[in-house]
Amino acid sequence: MKNLEVRTAAKSAGVKLWEIAEVLGITDGNFSRKLRRELPRKEQEQIIGIINEIAAEREGTA
Figure 1 (tube, helix red, strand yellow):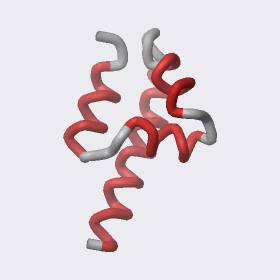
Figure 2 (cartoon, one colour; figure 1 turned 90 degrees about the horizontal axis):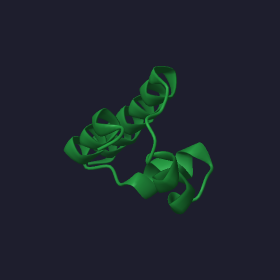
Figure 3 (cartoon, rainbow, N blue to C red; figure 1 turned 90 degrees about the vertical axis):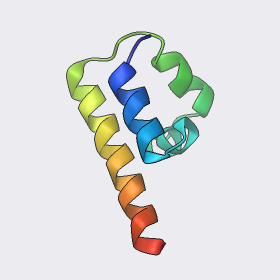
Figure 4 (cartoon, rainbow, N blue to C red; figure 1 turned 135 degrees about the vertical axis):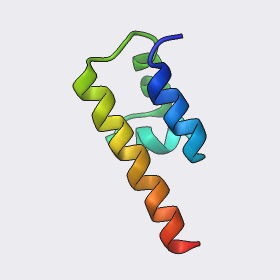
């Protein structure tokens, strides 16, 4: 499976792919298609950062 680190980080943080897509300003369908091919390391790190931000926001409001 491509982009396993991104998918695993999202799943373990309880963040849905559509939430990441929303922050990136793209549709969830486009984001899912983007994940079909391995992303450059820099882009993966950016997405993992977004996942961490979304998870931190949830913890702050819980």
